[in-house]
Each structure stands twice: as structure tokens, then as C-alpha cells.
Length: 361
Image 1 (cartoon, rainbow, N blue to C red):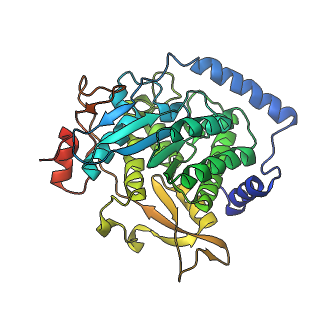
Image 2 (cartoon, rainbow, N blue to C red):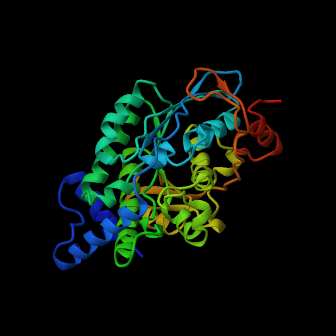
Image 3 (cartoon, rainbow, N blue to C red):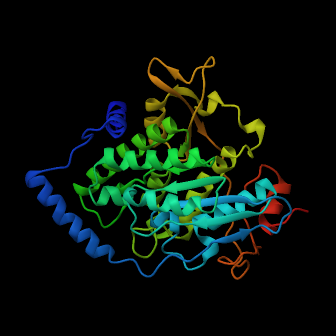
């Protein structure tokens, strides 16, 4: 279990400068370096590039909603052959079904990207004038031992830049790298602790910057550990099609809520589900412990801050199964609607049917 003060220290170092959590030295570092080389050799090099999924989703009336996807290979969808099964395409289909409007997807995520590439990607994304951006980054920072404070600072800067342009931001926090099969102990334990601490610090920084986060690591961790053959791709490092769908299910409600498109009756926090208002650092650590948890800024008695920092609303949004789009339908990469099975993202049968057909009856 990570501690609140660890996440807060990383976030503070990102904001004000400083080391945060330092790198390892000595004999343990040598052991971990050797294990990391073995793990990389076992995983091997990624096969090819992620499929291009850019285009318009949803043969629907109304103004376009512009969605940008930013980050690393998990955001790009490395490992799947069908562009309609990438996280961006799944989110675009689901968002179109909920909003009953077409969605234009621009995916600038790049395989192998670290947080240092966010500035370049944000510049590309802003050219499309997005209404909402989904960011997934952090895993490569952990594997390349980027200082957590530096990683968090770059993510916060990217978030602030997007929000300043009028774009809403949803960040899928760093995945739990302790679930990666080729990683041996003690490297696996360290990777888990490091990635979970980074995820919590990412939440603090993103919420402070005006965005919201969804915990990815804790969501996929137990499921990956129990069913690695289903949720990991062939390289046993990147998610499979089902793994990407699981992540998209968790992210879609928050992307919709960021645009005020989620049903109002589900916006009220439910204390019986463990939802409520907490200091952001406390909420960040709790989010890491339970997958699919959303953390967003809020106010208490008209104030954004309390004695322990920024107020945050912790939510466990209900996820629904996202059926795989029908192969061969749609035209990702072209400026035209992409029909096909879309995520069943709405709370009722009408939205489910719209998601399946890409049309409103």
C-alpha cells in the first residue's frame, strides 16, 4: 500500500522542484538492471505500429464533438489489428452514442512515448481544436526510471495547456506494472510500488490543474493477474483487445461527464458506494486501491480548498460492457462517419441500441 505522504511529496516536488522519489543505487540497482534487461528480452520489440483510427464516428446529426487521444502505446492501441478496437475508437463510438452526435477522433499517441513527449503531442492535438482529451502516460517513465517529479510535472503542464485552450482533460493514470509476467522479483514489487505512487501523484497534479483522473492500474491489475492470457496481448506486456476494452469501459463515463453528457441522476455521489468528498491526496491514494475510480475537483461551502489542500470528489462510476465493433464497418482515417457496433454506454435500452448501430432510432 502506498502512503498519502509519498504521493503528496512527488506532486509537491513536481510543482516546486526537488527530487521526489530518488533512483536506486548500489547492489540492488545492479540486480534490478539485470532483471529489467531479461524482461525486455522476453517481451521483445513491439511488432509494427498501432492502427490508425482517426476519423468521424457516428452517423448522427448535430455538431461534431472533437476527441483527442494523447500518450503512449496503451493510448495508441498497440497490439490490436483492427483500428475499431483501439481505445480511441471505442471511446469515440461510445461518446457518439451517449451524446447522439458525431465524434471526430484525433489520436496523436505514440508507442514508447514518455511524459517528455507530451508537449509535442499536445501541440499536435490542439491543431484539431479538441473539446476533450484523454491522456494515458507513465508506464514508460517507470521502466526508464524517469524521476517521478519530472514525469508528474510534464503531465500537469500538458493538462494546464489543454484546459487553457478550452479542452476538458481526462487522464488514465499509470497502470500497475506489477502485473507484467516477464518481470521477476524484486523488480516486480518495485515496479508495482513505483507505478502506484506515480499514479497517485498524477491524480493530485491533474486535479490541481483542473482535470480529472481515472485509475487504470488497480482496475486491470487483479484481472490481468487472474487472466493474463485474455487481457494481455501476445507480448505479455501490452493489453489485448479485451484489455483495451476494459480500460475504455472505465474511461468512457468520465469522458462523457467531463462534457456534461452523463445522466444527472448518476452525478450525485453515493455514500453507500464509497463515493464522497476528500482532500485530493487522500482521494488519490484511495483511487489507486480500487480500479476505475474517478477523482475530480469540487467545492465545499463554495471553497475549492480546505485545511488539507484541494477538495476532490471520488466517484466509482458504473461501467457497462463495450461490445466489439463489427469488423469491416467504418472508415477510420477518413473524414466520414464510421458505423458499426459502438459501446453500450448509456443507462437505458435506447442508448444501448444507439451504441450498437451508431444511429439514433
